[in-house]
Image 1 (cartoon, rainbow, N blue to C red):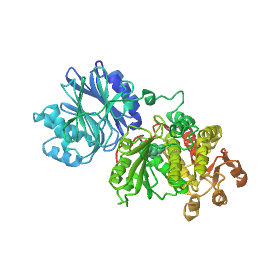
Image 2: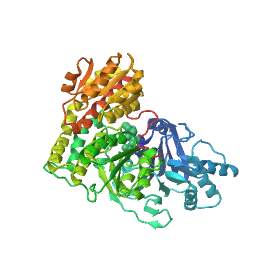
Image 3: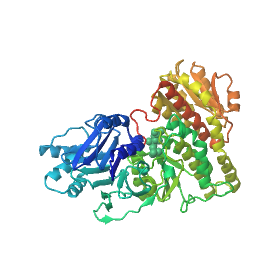
Image 4: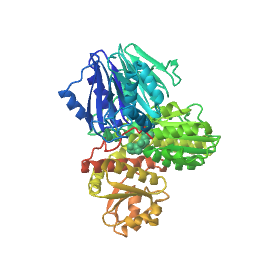
Length: 605
Ligand code: M6R
């Protein structure tokens, strides 16, 4: 959450910083700001709300200068206001910060006793006040930054800009991502490489605990023990950093539409056509694994929930699942023959990263399924499997979910083969079904017009219930999450069989109940639960295939899905879950790509 940028340029940097912030706006949009040093003077502009508001201010009050830092905020301490917006300034120093300073209260109290007063409610202001205090006591900017960093507890990425210093930005990374960009006589920093894509493809990723002094001629990087160190410069593929809507109305629409291509790409990477026994990355072996522990947050967690069924069914592997924010606070029992698998689109989710670090010393192997190969989670895993979905900008995760499912399904099949649980013939049969997923997803996307009509009905609802059994239960959870996230309609999901244990009390003539039920082995059971709703005048919307719809009888609201092999049903049924949320949100006029209170990358615990 929160995006930070810094530029030491050879021309006015505000426009460059603003452009980079646009690429980071997915990380938070409660407020934004830029600070520059011009002719030695530090100055800043800040605005509440989206970047467009900052742009209006910059038009009327331009911010000259060739050195600057910028920030887009997701509020943690203190609500969205100009006073709480970054950059924060005290005396001769300004700071932008992503993360949380956990000891800020103690620091604030200490500074208060020195007569220092605060102008915001943020934890960040303690950083800038501390640095300013050290400067006042005669320290140089480098000494002040270093002394300040030593006083901070918590997880953060931050950057300092000093009055009188037009060729210096000091930045630090502890727990939150930060990278340095190398230009021609210019230097940059950003929360991710995508932010810097318009400026450079040469990136240095800072390691945990690193801090750096940037000047136009390069970066001096120090590790957590303050020893000067070298970190490699890598070239990123700028094609992968492209962030445009390609003619779609929203990023979410574009990302949903991309799914057939993305799934094809993921499949092609791991199991090209004609490869009957595709190799997984070296070192990835489930044959001696006695238990698989899967950990993630949000949509990625639901992908794990689906994958649990696959690992049990196709690999005979006991699976334990946990939400990352719960995992490390419940003393999980971990063993030397366990494999721990972490799933994350961004690869930067603070809870998932912390869970990974908690598990790593106790298990045989740490594996991750991520979308950003250079992310912290990828870099801290023994084996990282990219899903090859390309940048996902819409806050509601769509293509990353289906690509995660595709890669996890392949992993489960491969584990089954390695463990002798699946015969080579059974493996080949499931693999060829998996290869058919992109085509069926394209067919599901073709149902958009019908979904639009159903969504009109949903947009009037106050609450919506989603039901499913087996792998359709996590799909129901995902459908409910998507709907809540972007339409702000309260939605709940239940395993269909649980309905009678309580939630059926909610059913009345106003409650839409969406049932995911392909005609599989569990169909009859789910259909009975659906009848229980219909018997109480509930408004059922049944999503099934031709056989299921025929068997269900008279259900007025229905959506016909293609008939698909069991293993890919969750991938294909994800599409109506996404489109329902999308069109309901459009009917309600909410902000689809940047829904209120949310941010794409959750880098605070
Ligand atoms: O980047 P991650 O996959 O680790 O993110 C996890 C969740 O924050 C994320 O899936 C969130 O729930 C989405 N906004 C859901 O659409």
